[in-house]
Length: 381
Image (cartoon, rainbow, N blue to C red; front, side, top):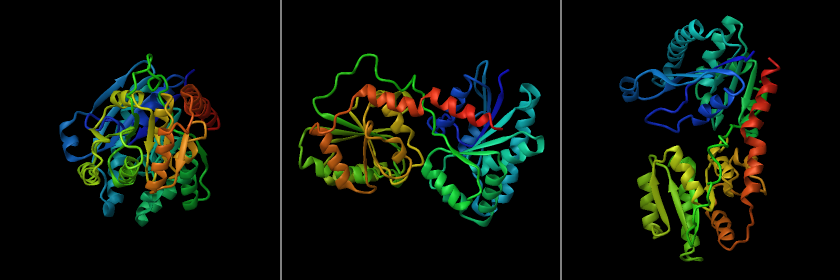
């Protein structure tokens, strides 16, 4: 008989943010191959989304049911009251789930605050084991006030198992609470969707680099633009850089590119949906992620699954994802190192086989690998 897994998460794709929490969506879909899965997504959002988007089931089939609801993020100095409000909303939704779907065998929460703490209270009251997957980078975001720290520590010590999506994140958690029971299981990638094109797209005569990110300071795109400037002085006309995504720094980055005189090498696409991300990956030669900090780096693996080599920074998660068989690592905030790595690709100094890149990613982060790891963990509860 298939076990029932209830996923509780504050991050899940919405109409206004279709890639927000997409890694939770992917995990739910993969888990539904071996388990009956119900997702309660009480999503943190803004006033507009709260009042103008319907609360509804957004996906449903025989083994996967998903209900998405909205709530506002808690204010930092009133977090205790907010947490009780968030938990009360989940308690109500949990009762509705049990009445129609039955009692879950396992509650699997994502993110320690607020969902993990609320899931722990629900699970303990009903003697249901609770697993927590932590994604937050840096983990110190959960430790900003005494209330945050207290709830975080209670949750880490109270749940049955904690999954960190990377060794670097596990280290951060254990530095705060050494007694936490932790394992590392990376995010799963939809390897059927992110796959090489059935027919290899015709490549440009120049080498195409691609990055896709939320355009914030943390993603390090400014250092990439400085690297492009340096590279343009060495290899004029032999490459282009596609910058996919939107965010608060987009206008600043476009202005920086203009001031550096590199707009003829750069193209800002704006926000991309998932299909567009895959299409751009397939039409590119090398993927770059110049982040200043990453818990994991899902988009790196999406590129690898499509057979594309990557350039990434040693900023946490990528250090475990990128191997000599799949790409190149450079230091954080080092535009010279980025330019050198890009130059090596242009000069054909790096040799990567697309199938080898994909096979390496599949073996470690494909759907089969994820299900094997999660089955072992669930089996200990």
